[in-house]
Amino acid sequence: MKRARSPNSPADYKKIRVPKKLQIESVHHDERMATTSNRIQRIHHPESPANAATTSSPSMPVESLTTKQQINQSPGYAYEPPNVDKANLPNVLELVTGEKFVVRGVFGKGGSCTVFRVKDENGTQCAAKLIAERIPEYPTYYELLAHEKIIKSPHTNLISFVVNGMLTDSLPGFNGEIIVTEGLGPSLRNVMRRARLDTNRAYYPSFCTDNIKRIGSQIAKAMAHLETLKIFHLDLKAGNVVFVKPDIRYTIEHNDIQPTIQMGDIGIKVIDFGCSASHWEHWENKKWREYNLLPYGRQK
Image 1 (cartoon, helix red, strand yellow):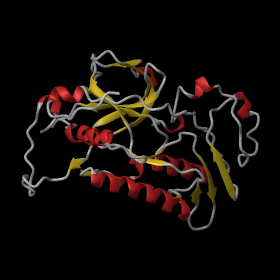
Image 2 (cartoon, helix red, strand yellow):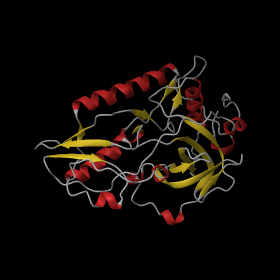
Image 3 (cartoon, helix red, strand yellow):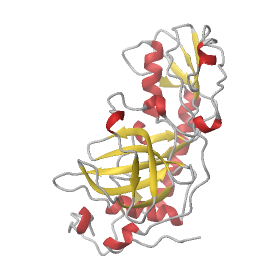
């Protein structure tokens, strides 16, 4: 078992590595929009001919005949951004170390990065974050430092790091740097957006009180662990809290004031340390920090 090294120099960033995590089985999500009955049960599974023939009652569970191989190929597909041009997606992301990741789609896009849905050479589902070219350059020092600390002290409610480095061929609009983490399910925001479509409302439904307590408890535990690691997340939001399992099941309870989402199996992880920072040390100037850019836009 390899032990990750502390990122004290630019060369070290390409060497941080941990063993591959156990594969998380992933499934497509049912794209169908449920009707506006009093109580809707949503079970997201891949669309198939068998499903199409049995969807007359959207409140009933629908079993999928999709094979396990097909399930493992496209986690989070139903929550892919609508403006993704799949024809122009790269087929493979190859690191200078020789590791290759097959691109399956896109988890999401941001102002400083794009996160691709990928599969490694062992078939394990991952998320590959590519850093966009920006002026000023987007620093990844504290993001990698946060992952380094979590590698040494992992937590159930924090995303797991896989590998980072540089691509052999940088894609247009990106600086060539890649950060790979485990592949997970949809975010809280994804589920709320889908539930809004289910209810045909102009605003997002909320989670029920019990779900809010359980989700909030896990977020609090994740933040408490980051505090012990002396890490500030600085970007905690619904889009950065994701469900561990991609096969999300939920029901919607309708009322005249606010529809509510109810889920039984809730396990979440906090993701995205792109805005994170470490706690100030006693020898630092706590008023302002001095930032000195290193190669590849990293900071010391």
